[in-house]
Image (cartoon, rainbow, N blue to C red; front, side, top):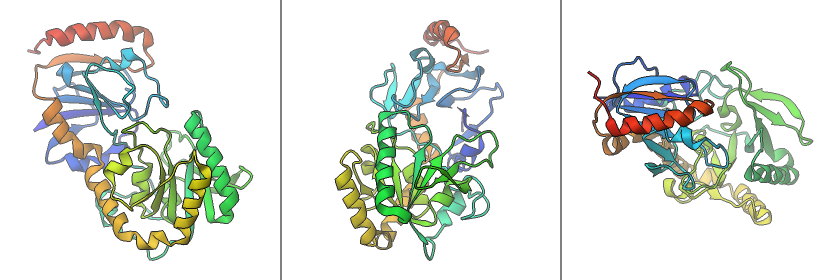
Length: 347
């Protein structure tokens, strides 16, 4: 059985409930012990300088963001034998263009909706609620740094004026190291923070029939966890994003809108809400949920990826640097390129 080291700057609990999908295919390690592994996968930013015994060409960087959301230096990305990215504008000698499969946030922490955190079995067994007391929710990024994010805020403001109390707008905060700190704050109509705040995304999705998902990028293969989380919470998604969602989910399982045509988008949302689309779409939501649970999990797709892209190869001692070590990265990338050519075997 192959051994795979999986490193991320996210705490391990974000990934551990998903790793059950790998238990019969390969062994996942979340903490390197120096012993040889067949592949080393880094999700986004390496938290610190690390050394591992591994085939150098089987080091993989998965970029969860499009280029307009995160700009990592070429010297950082070129440390890796393979670059896995949803963005076709990012260059690398072995770039693989594919979705980034971020970890779901739904049910990750304690919630009012479900109590204890939900594991994979809990998510799979979760039936739709007998009733959903609220209509529409949306999560806004607290940063709004890019053009798309700023445009999204303007569109949400427009919806808040039109739908009033029928829509609840939540601001997503950057959490601190405390896993129980507030992550979602409700906004009042005048953009002040309301007293309501929640730790888990379930509490801003589960009570609502509809959930508006506005992606921060429309890169061809980009799809964040927001759409998956809406399906996991049995909410009908109203979606603005790239083409990947159309490839992944059955027709009729979500409403696609264009926030850059706000009049048309608002009219489409109004029609969906008034037509009781949620109630008539439960079978399609169920199919989409099953697809999320079975297929939109990074550890579900790794087996085929490892077989195809990371075959057995010579081991070497590989050192990878975090992206903030810019000066050392330049010289380190030159040394890694040389070592890849030689690929010395460890005795």
